[in-house]
Length: 354
Ligand code: PMP
Image (cartoon, rainbow, N blue to C red; front, side, top):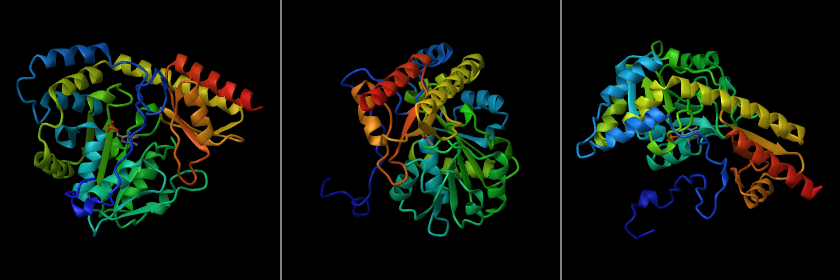
C-alpha cells in the first residue's frame, strides 16, 4: 500500500478469487468454471470479430441484445450487458444502495457482495442462513434495504423457489431485490418471468458457467426499463465499452448453439448426481445442490485437510476458513473424467487415514 491511497480504502479488503495456479496441471474443481470449451460457433464468431478490433465495440451490444431478447423471452429495454455479472452486481450496489437503503444479504453467500458494499461505502446487514444452510424467506420480509440473493446460493448450492422470491418482492415494494442467477441453469427456478410484474426486481445472469465463457467476461442484468436505465447511467459514467466485440460475438454464438448448451447442462447434472451419491457412500454429507458445484463435509476429516490432501494429489477444490464453513469443501462439477479423478483421490485420502 502506498501513502497515496485514499483514506477510505485503507481498511478495505479486496475480494480474493479462487486459486489459478500455474505450477502444475490440476484437475481444477475450485472456481465453478465449465469443463467444456465454448461452443465451436461461439469461438468462430469471436475469431471473426477479432478482425474488427480497430474499431470501438457497440456500447449498446445491439446484435447480442436482439439475440438475447429472443433467447430469454424479454424485450431489448429489459437488459443490460456487462463485463461479467460481477460488474452488473457492482452497478447495482452503486445505483440502488445508500444509507437509506443499505445492502442486505445472507451471512453465507457470494463473498463479493461484502466487497462491493465496502468499495462503494455502502452499509450492509447480513442475515444468517438457517441451521440447514437455507435462506429463510420470511427473514427478508420488510428488510428495509436492497436485497441481494444468489439463487442457487453460493457456496452452498441450495436454491429457493420462484414463489418464495415473489413473496420477498411483494414484502419489499420500496426496495430493489437483486436475484443473482449465476448458477440457475444447473437446476434452479428462475425469477426471470417476474420482471414484467415487479418494478423492484433485478435478475443477473452470467455466461461464465453454463455458457463456458468465464474468460470472455459477459454478464446480463434483466429488469424493467426504468431500473435498466439507472444501471446504464452507471455504465455510461464508467465505461460504455465494457463488453468488447469478441466477447459480444462469442455471446451470440453461445446463445445460438442451444443444442450444445443443453447437452452440457445434462452432463453436469448427471455428474453432480454421481459425485453426490459416491461421496455420500463414503460418509460425506452433501447439501442439496441446484448448481454446478456441491458443498460437502466429511464426518471425520476437516475441510482444510480434505482441501490440502486433494491438492497434493493434483485436485483443486475450494475451502473457506470461516465459521460454519470450515468443515466443508466446495467442489465444482466437472467432466466425467474429472469426477472420476476426484472420487479416486477422496477414496485414497480416506484409505490413507483409516
Ligand atoms: N455470482 C455468483 C454467486 C458467483 O459465484 C459468481 C462467480 N464467481 C458471480 C456472480 C460472478 O461471475 P462472473 O463475473 O464471472 O459473471
